[in-house]
Image 1 (tube, helix red, strand yellow):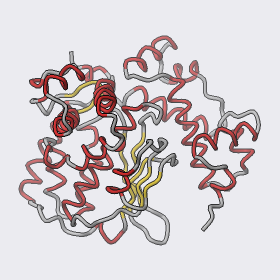
Image 2: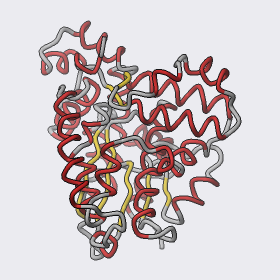
Image 3: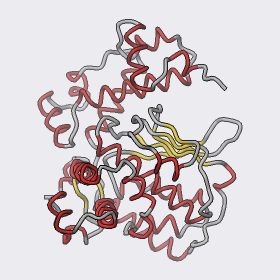
Image 4: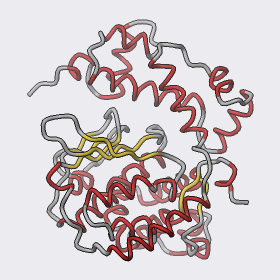
Length: 344
């Protein structure tokens, strides 16, 4: 049964194919890889197919633990163009400009995943540009961290393929903490790399967005756009329950209302038991989503809102400022006061 047709978060088999190809290049034998992942290579040939997102995360975790290499997800993303099998990827490559390629990728996210969202957010600072923001992945789960690093590395590989290998983004940030070794990350993403950030994002300067893509083919783009529209229609399912809970939590936090699992279940017209079961099927829990969302909301407010730290602490459910300071230090490695007024 195709679980993606019944609301469970699902992801294209293309990413698992790319993970497996990089694992083979890294020295994992075919038989060992099949034993690790539980996937028959024959499962990886229908690139319109999807797997449950929880299975994708489990593949990431199995391979990363076997290799014991924190740089593996970045290497897989860096090498993704040679393993590309996604119609969305080829559509972006056939687009006229970097901006057009990004727009078509973002518009067609649901053609490859319902496990998270990617949005293009214009920058409001003096330099302008665009942020590709990835939302909905649990920063506490290893497989989700791998997927976040892979996707931003993949986006950057595609952009460099279009405009030149020397291109460096303005900033690359991940919501999860830094792995024990960030050498591969820094070598690929450059000096603007940050961890324990408010959002997972890739920031592109304004001057790169309207550069032409050397592989642009208007006729091919038109054909591929029709194919991708068909893929989206075939997987036209609601967002995962994890994403829906996250959006509900953000609304409740913004209103200063205490979010509870009972209230979330009522909002989604489910029983508590059913909500717990559906989140478990997606490899997550209400508690995990709540913790990650509160953290993201709090860090974002500290860094961008004029609200007092005490008020922010109360909004995200802390009884006092002291406990909030301790949590914030654990999340980001710094205090709210220092994060609000960073030094030079």
